[in-house]
Image 1 (tube, rainbow, N blue to C red):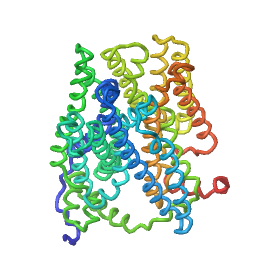
Image 2 (image 1 turned 30 degrees about the horizontal axis):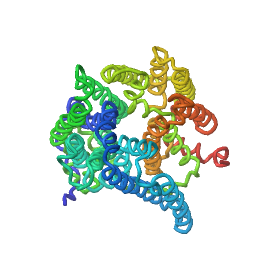
Image 3 (image 1 turned 90 degrees about the vertical axis):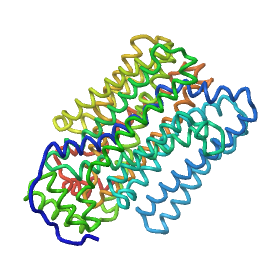
Image 4 (image 1 turned 135 degrees about the vertical axis):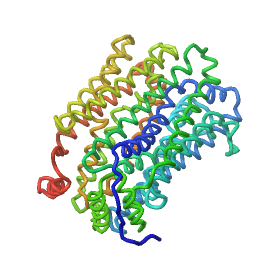
Length: 546
């Protein structure tokens, strides 16, 4: 153990060094976007390859349904454990135990009614549920990886945690591409595919927490906010990159080739940025904060000298030592409203339907009658709009404030989704439908996309910053819910007969209206307020009344 005092002999501060470290860490954000969005180009092919053959093989269909029940049950178990762990952090043992029991009963009932009790027969409803679960399976890993992120950051460290994420990305890329060849589950091929997607999702969950943490801890205070914001940019950029990759893989190819082989190369392509991420993370140092936590003060001082000058390096180490002594308060010290607002910001960010657009846009375009290559090209346009307006949001959020952007954005998203649903309902699936989707995407990218993360980072006072983990977990669970249920809603025969694929979009439009009302009614403006001032706001009687 290195218990010595920090020894700082010379300055080797370099903005290029900090930029290089930031670039290396933001590759974790890029892989976050890449891994979650790669499914977009393969949705139709996965159904053809995995689901359609089950209609011709009853035994295989029954086996797939049984394994689906096991994997879905595992998913519900993870959610139950995660929710209950938060309950015991929030409340005393007796109350937490009662609420925990209620949560288990509710989740158990949903699991039993929704899939555990269904017969092992491949009905259209079961088929849609399995297909939706397959597409959303990476999000199960995201929930698990996000929950483990705090423990990994404390035990392995920020650097080794990101190295672990890169390994998981690489394994997931190859396993998802050739699930029958690398099937260690001894189960059906589709189950092997789901397991590899879950592994990739664990990598996403870890990277979603550790990448911005690494950047925040390695960056000088005067440019920290700007550098951390590039992680969000990297996520959106990763999505756009994979949209291009999917398009060029499918370009000029027959549908049969895409359905049998092309989708494999879409998933396998992730191995390239995963390898680059691994190599780059090998070359970067651990953060000074983690090194001080592990009593490696001398090495922490050397790293600090590389990112700032001599005087600031000494001050940085002293601040880290001081902050580690800060006492953490009970998460309910400022009342329950701040926790509720954090959860609902995360839930509404997903319930407005953004990941339906990001994950299913190629399928949506196919529902408009566009073939695979054209659908993937249109998806690139959606990705570019998302990227451009995210950058605009980064540069305008401090000018216009958080609350106005969120309210206006939610109402604009409601208009976009209502219009898209109307186009499906009336059968007018031309340019107007595309414009409604692009309008919706731009509205999200200017508001609830990046600004939600800004508000989540600002609403929790210093002493209860750990409660942010509840909001992050709620976001992944909401993401899984929307991604899993869209396929069920969109492919339901009765809903298609009566709403012609428009029903789901009207649900998301309603969520946009509710999100705007929630922002107006409950959420305070955080622009220009320090974390200490936010603590005073939550202690105000007007908020304690809730």
